Image 1: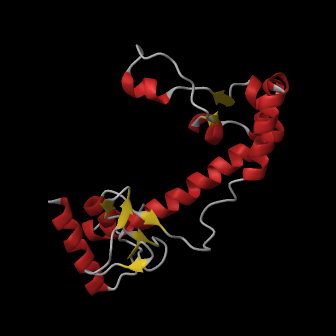
Image 2: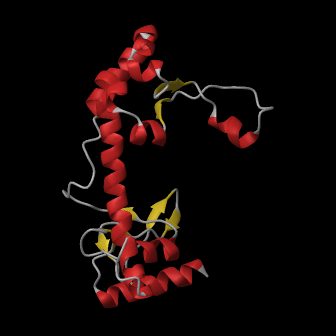
Length: 189
């Protein structure tokens, strides 16, 4: 049933010429799906701020997933990979120094490593085997509602979180707007 819905979406998209592409090719009835380990995946690629505006929810409802192709549009702030890498090195080599930072002392930022995600899936009875994975934890409340001065010299993390949320909200707003207008809500979000 999902394949038939996807085929219908692909055909309707090709007729409408909406600019939605799959695997780098504009979606048409003849477009080839992505393949992952030999399994065909019908995942459309669209620009929700361009030609594919208003089609994101349709793509998600029919295909279950969508790649967002935003090209050079600055909808998200710089992810600050270099800064996070420096912070990661500090947290590994000098954990006590990291814990002295204002954001860490106030529990606004955490550094986590050695979790075992397979235990989450398999249950607590599974022997703990740490993943080789590290992550920084930031809560919505601390990043959005926390005072930037409490972040100290790491305020860029909260600012980046806020900018990312704003960008993602803009994409969601554009995706929902056609539905709101269709429902007669006057386009107010």
